[in-house]
Length: 266
Image 1: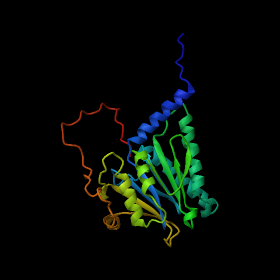
Image 2: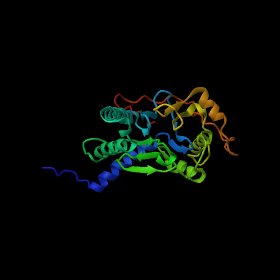
Image 3: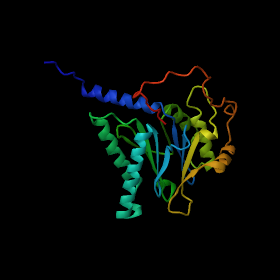
């Protein structure tokens, strides 16, 4: 009779965490910045239709990085939970904290389960309040941990490098165009050599406290986004950075065998 292979619980959790972090690190960053009238979310996205930033409820927005199919399932579940709670009780009973707690329980259960792989995602749940002091930004990691962020936050890609730039340059009371400029510049400083991020690479959304409608989220696209991007004050040196381009053309890569195709994280 063969002896079953033994792995210590500490090593098992470490391996699962390393697996999730590698998947998240392959994605592109998402930046959240508080500005004077609300909360700005900016993401680098390779697809114009596969959104990383979406509305959950009236004052709540969802953003994620990693495997699209995994965080899209959680987004849909969050919308259903919010709709059910708002219909059963009151719209004000739907809060970012309750959604963050629900997501944390789900991610924590999946991470600790031996029967399935951990989710390769990180999530932002942001809620806008009646005043800036009431704004909430929650960051949830692959293992169900929750962090209450203040001012700004970043996840995915080279998050530590981008976060360092934000820490050095963020200040309270930014206007919308200033917050967008800070987020774009931070995304361009994810490498040792700064790069220029172009407007067609961006997905932008805001929770706008000044909107008269009950729903405070709006997606900034088209001419509005172009005008804001053109108004950004680019610091010296960043304007000379090389724009992001694709690799030099080469011989076609060999096709992967059937069943071995793994989608890139967003």
